[in-house]
Image 1 (cartoon, rainbow, N blue to C red):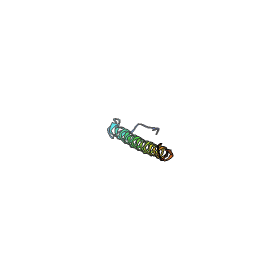
Image 2 (image 1 turned 90 degrees about the vertical axis):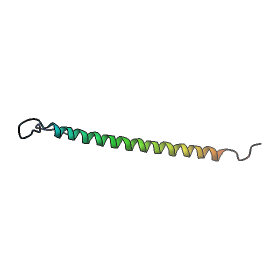
Image 3 (image 1 turned 45 degrees about the horizontal axis):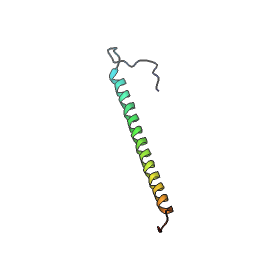
Image 4 (image 1 turned 30 degrees about the horizontal axis):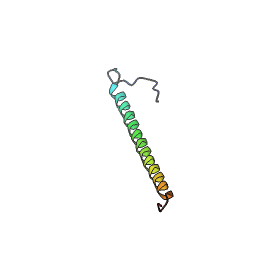
Length: 66
């Protein structure tokens, strides 16, 4: 997390809340993008693993039932 040595202020001396709000929105947007990428990657890995297991089971099944 970024540490500020001074509080950012506007020319009239008031705290620049818009600056901090924009920083927070950017950080939140980045977090949401990263979470979506992680969820998508996990879903892809889960589907791939399921297909590998199904193919392995189907391949090891006997070809003829008696």
